[in-house]
Amino acid sequence: MRVEVQLLLWALCVGLGATGAPEEEEETRKVSLELNPGSSNSTENLLHIRAVGNGSTIHYVWSTIGAPTVLLIYTDSEHTQLKVNWTKLLSPEPHGAIRVEPANRVRYSTALLFTRIFEYKDINNTANFTGTDRKLFYPPYELSGFTWGSARDSMNSSSLTARLSGVNSTDPNFNNGSVSFQVSAYKGSGRDRSSPQLLHNANCTKMEFVLSGVKPRGNNSRFALEMVTLEKKAGRKKMKSVRSIDDEYTPTIFEVMELVPDTPNTSHALGYFQWKSVAYGTAEGGRANALPCKMYRPRSLNETLRIPSIVYAFYGEDLADGYNIEAYNVSFGIADGDFYDKHGFLGWSALIGYGTPPRDSFSVLVMCIMAVALGAPLVLLIVGSIVVVVMRRKTVTPSYEPVN
Ligand SMILES: *[C@@H]1O[C@H](CO)[C@@H](O)[C@H](O)[C@H]1NC(C)=O
Ligand SMILES: *[C@@H]1O[C@H](CO)[C@@H](O)[C@H](O)[C@H]1NC(C)=O
Ligand SMILES: *[C@@H]1O[C@H](CO)[C@@H](O)[C@H](O)[C@H]1NC(C)=O
Ligand SMILES: *[C@@H]1O[C@H](CO)[C@@H](O)[C@H](O)[C@H]1NC(C)=O
Image (cartoon, rainbow, N blue to C red):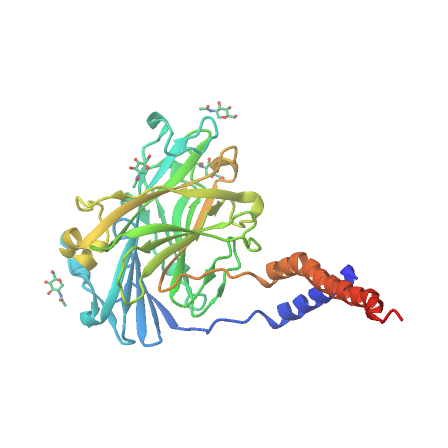
């Protein structure tokens, strides 16, 4: 009996799986990539991703002029244009060199800067980044001082991907290695095929931070990355942890982290940064090479940011007074886990997007496991109760018959 019920549920599940789970309304955008708009310059990188549709345009501007930075600019028109004054951008006073026109259609903007990479010696293999003795830290790698190759060769307009790759050109530890940001944009919703198989939609882009082939400066090296983000005053970003019990796509990792604006009373959507709490020790990813990652409390940087970045070119003088600027660290690795030198690779993916962050709903597989686990006993219980009631009726009924 029980086996039959289970078989029935499985058959139902397989059917459901084959037809696919009900999809949310599909939003698509026309997405284009352009490198260095309005310039023939090939020694700098300013990658413009334009995503148009649904009455709006989302502009993503990635650049390695200064610290690697991405700007997200949301406009409520399909016809807004990015304007870059290159003379100004490459001058010591870049304020106003990057604009979106018409400016009154800009509804929201934010930025994310990647500032430093920390390396420390984890002698006892505890992966305790904050508690680590200061003298076990090597001098940090300042990304604004790196030499970045042209993104042109890696740009692919059909897969909507590009790579910004840089080295610390004076440091022999980078002879065979590099730091890179692999950027992907999307026309519609879906799920990445590579680990950690993040869900995406047309309103977001993905970056994968990769530290590959860099020679560690000692044994037991672990790394951490520092990022800076900003939000208009009155708001600041808050960190949110979204737990998921569904780990079909990212085995053993149950946590999705989000950095979202904590701005009450806004009538429109805002930007977000979302990732799963995992990095990978090989390019292939996979469970065996998962390196859990940890995010630390933000530090306010309101005494103006001093790191060179395209944020000045876009926000200009407003930056100091109008915005809350905060820095965050994220460290990679877990106690008793593998060190960087095992594969000489570290890859961490995150989404940068506008609107509602993608959420994992229960997959068909997990729903079926639950249905079979919970459903079968339930069905048995119900069937059992009916049988018992019917049987009792049968046995009870004779007593109502007149004795005589
Ligand atoms: C670009 O910036 C330079 C330097 O600030 C300025 O002289 C020039 O007029 C600007 N060009 C345009 C087209 O606005
Ligand atoms: C770079 O790789 C080559 C060949 O694999 C090796 O001979 C060389 O020692 C490496 N250099 C560094 C700095 O790791
Ligand atoms: C690093 O580890 C290797 C191999 O275990 C060892 O030979 C070497 O002495 C270590 N180096 C340092 C600086 O501890
Ligand atoms: C990140 O960690 C490093 C090393 O502990 C520290 O110097 C730096 O101030 C931290 N940054 C933030 C934003 O907390």
